[in-house]
Length: 501
Ligand SMILES: Nc1ncnc2c1ncn2[C@@H]1O[C@H](COP(=O)(O)OP(=O)(O)OP(=O)(O)O)[C@@H](O)[C@H]1O
Image 1 (cartoon, rainbow, N blue to C red):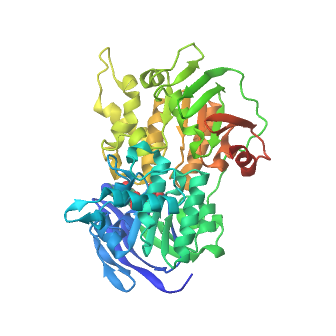
Image 2: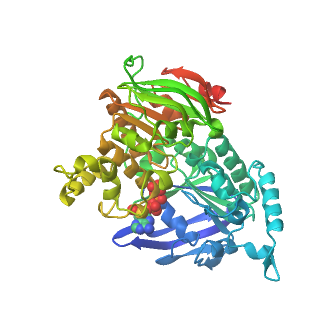
Image 3: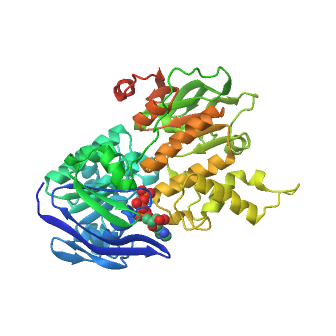
């Protein structure tokens, strides 16, 4: 790592209406360093890096890259200045091939006499995918054939193949499995060794301490401090982010409690061609059942299959009263809640208000009279109650979900299902992108739900939260359940990993 300044952030400001997202922020970022940007949800991290990478226009202030002011108006201009980004949610475009996505905005490299040489483009993209170790992804395939994680890997290629001076990695690791994370870390190290810079945004503090050289902290859009990672502990960082000491318990602290024998959901021989095979398990009343595994293990499909959202599902998902869950409307009607890992596409209606999103699954209950008339005041009260319960940082519930920070979108997803008061809750990656304070609240909420007799399935790449929160963890491998671990004080990440690989 050198002490040579690569980027000067000078008095940068950005507001959205009355929200001052970034307020007069100034700090320096050096060459050859992994510079982490941390702060609670809505503290301005993405807004700052989105201005740097041409996604949002800047209100005032400057970015000075290697001594020269830059003013990218879009991502292609930012790339041309040597700045790229892997965004928080999906950064690839549907309806295009893998190669078209990788070279989006830079297709002119493959155009001669007005004709695009698709073969040459595919060949170069395939060579890049091979170089990155992602051979199984094919340049000529449509991007839509790939799942969320693979699309993130394609984004790594897209954002880094041209050796940019700065690569922003915005909350990407929690979208990836352990394997995907290792791939990402490898490429981060390569970029760093080449003398280039990474701006790394993550809510995983152990990861931040391990992978970054320097850390800048934002709070409510305001610059707080820049510190050396090696001088910091997790508690120091929490204090800088939150502005005070954090107290109270984080995960569950009970061990040895007996889970009820009462079965609320029985999954028998469930298969989805090419994804999962013969999955069978029972979920008990008041149980938190975890699912862990590597990316291709099929664990995310299990959540979909239970909610009736899989195509071509075989086998049965049966409630205690004998009801068969075969489709989403039946699942919702029978109090099953589900949050997907692909938040923006599968869990929320991004172009609707926070209020609409929270009320949507509960409309049947909120209507009055035989015709179920909806009363705006009642809906508004309902939305406000649950948005506040989970501390969504917003102007009001009429605000569009698309305007929220990533972590706050995730809070809306959870608020809608807490409001629905479901008995069976299937949470796929529930704390993805959520800051430590709200994570703590969610864990406490899950603990309370279990004590209230609700049953939770938690599918997660975060092994520590599985260990900390679950009564039982099922490990998936190659589409099958490969092992089971019961809640135990001595369980550690290695016990799970050895069953996953
Ligand atoms: N397009 C937008 N329109 C209106 N408000 C916005 C928009 N984008 C961001 N904001 C607001 O700006 C503030 C900062 O959001 P930002 O996304 O930068 O936070 P963040 O630190 O990246 O959070 P997270 O950790 O949740 O991703 C939030 O209050 C957010 O609601």
